[in-house]
Structure formats: structure tokens, C-alpha cells
Image (cartoon, rainbow over all chains, first blue to last red; front, side, top):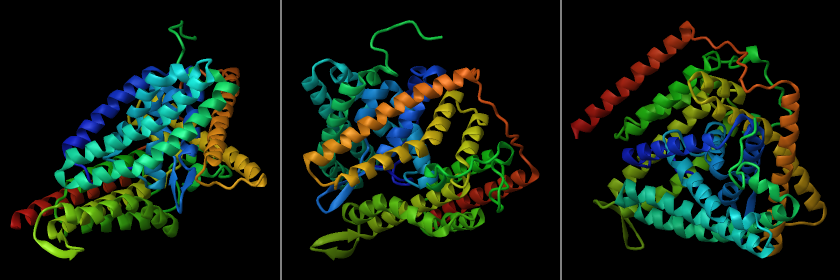
Length: 210
Length: 265
């Protein structure tokens, strides 16, 4: 969900901007030039995945897939999702300029958290644990994103409380759908190319490639 | 969206970056980025509904000057308005104040309607200006301008790679979707559909990683050292200064007018 310009209060916008810069700095530290091609092509893939529409009854929702991005990219999810949001704002007109920081944090912070919590399970040898980790990662990331959108709306003024509640409610079915899709994707990656989960996030501290 | 997703678009030669038909494209990309940012900051700060009509008009003029396809651009606005619609419907009922009308016994306040209107005006004005000034740029010109505006080169590299491969991955996605359609896949709300889409996304990621390994090898083969070669010579010209001065005057005027207008109440 993209918040637009003009809705949020100034302190929230500034706070979001600062948090986004911090997250970007941490995310860029996790990247090196060696990893930029992998991060870039994966970032492009998550951009395309977010264009996929899934029918829910008579309506449809577009995917966000930030949970899977967190599992695959780790802290690099921050710059990768930021780039996606920037491109969407500039070339699609989704979102806005002053809300870019808030929108980035709302989507990328849950991604990073979910990645830290569940990556071990997703890349493990036990397929049932992997599937469950995928399910949790997909669903949890969306729930956290919805809660953060609700939080920034609530912080911006009491008049947004009904909208904030509705955002959370509307994202419950999306969380289920993203959880199931993320679980399927994790099952496939776990079987076909488990290295994907450690392409950008090394499994253990190791000497940097030069 | 056109030039981000369109794989067939021919890349602009570096020396032609940012240049193109129309007065907006004659400006330096950096000027356009900074102008869109300044415009957004000022527009967000305006409180008066009447004064907010001016930024919207300014954005409309910029849109005409940028010579973007009008229908496509306005279609994109509708997407923005999805979120606004949501707030516009709810706000009149959640902001306390004198009731304008009643819906099923719920009072809708004038103050709420005004606030919803202000959000709609601000969001649309800023998005239109952004599409006109920055959206009309080649994505590579955007990246090169950002590097020159002191954005970390690593982040810009990531941006340029993402831009470059969105079209490629999108092509791959559509190939896979066609293959699925050939096998009678019709998406619905059921486990089979969700699993198939999940496998599809997983496969796209696997192929993305494999592709990136080949890209890295090809780059190393050509002696990539990590420097971003800035072939384009972006130069601030007299028209950039003129445009900046004009915009600055208008934005200052807007803020002053807003203070006056709000003070009058």
C-alpha cells in the first residue's frame, strides 16, 4: 500500500525519512560491488513480482512479496525495495516524494525483520520447516507492513483512526495469500537452488571476496 | 512505465541523455529532480484549499510542457487516487465538525471534506509534477543525475541494474505465464493457483540469480572496476538558472499567499 503525499504529518514524514536513510546505510553496507549484479537482478524480479495480480473472489490484489525479499536479500532488501518504490513513484506515479521514506520503511523494515527471524528455517534441510518458514515470512511481513501503515496514519492524526483500522483489516486476506505464495516459492527455491538464500547473506561470517 | 518495462526501446546515446523535444526535456536532469523535490515540499506545506489549486495548475502546465502522452499519464493518476478515494470516503465521517450532510445517520463534517480535498489536491499535484519533470527522463539519466547529486554510487548502481533488468525479467515472466496459459492455467482463489504463482516467482528468482552470475562474469571479463563511467556531460545552462529562479519565486509566492489566506480566517 502506497501512502500518498499530503496525508501524513510533518514529524512522521521526517521520522520516516531519517529511519529510511539509516536503513539504506545499513543495507548498502551489506552490499559490495561484487554483489550488485545479483542484488540488481533480484530487485528487478521483486519489482516484476509486485505487478502480478492475484484474484480474490471478484476483485484482485497485487503482490508485495516483501517477506520473500527479506528472506533472499537480508538487509539489502532495504535499498532494493527503496529502488522499486522510487521507480514506481517516478515512472508510475504510485506513492509520492515526501512519503518515500515512510513508504520504504513500512515495506522494507518488516522484510528485514522477517529475514532475520526465518531465513535459517527457509534454507534448512527440513522441507516442512522451510515451507512453514516461508508461510510465516510472507504473512508476517504483510501484517507488519499493514500495522506500520496504520501506525503512521494514527500518529498523523486521530481522524485517520478509521482508515488505519480498515488498512489492517483489508490486509488480512492479502497476508494469507502472500503467505501461501511465499511458502510455495520457498519450497521451490529450497529444492532447486537453496544457495539463493545465501547469495547476498552469507550463512556464516567469512572472508569477503576480493 | 512505458520506458521502464519496454525492452524494445532503444537506449539513448549517452550524449543525448536528458535532451529531447519540449521545454522540460531541455533542462538539466538535476534541475528537474531538485525542482520536483522543492515543489513537493512547498505543496505539502500549504494549508489553504484555494491556494492548493495553483500547484495543481502548475503541475498541469509542466505536464503539457513535458509532452508526455496525456491519456497514459492521467490513467496513472487514477492509481494514486485509489488510496485517496479511501481517505476521502472515510475522512468526512471521522473529522469532528459542523455536519454537511448525513449518510445513514452518520454526520459528514465540512472540516473532514476540506481535509480530504486538500490531500487529494496535494497528492495529485505532486505526482503530476513528478511524472512531468522526472518521469519524462530516461531512467539512466535519472541514475547519472542522482550520482552527481551526491547519492551513494552503490545505490545508483543498484538502481541502474534494476532498471536494466526489469524489462528482461518482465519478458521472462510473460513467457512463463504464456506457457502456463497454454496448459490451461486460469488464476483463481485456490491453493493450486497460489502454489503455481509461488513456483513461478521462485523460478524467476532462481533464474535471476543465475543470470546475475553470468552478468558478473561478463563484467569482470571486461575489466569492471566499480567506477560508474559518467559519459554524459550534464551542464547547468542559462535556462536552468532561469527556470530555477522562476520556480523559486512562484513557490515563495505560494507560501506567502497561503499564510495570507490562512491569516484572513
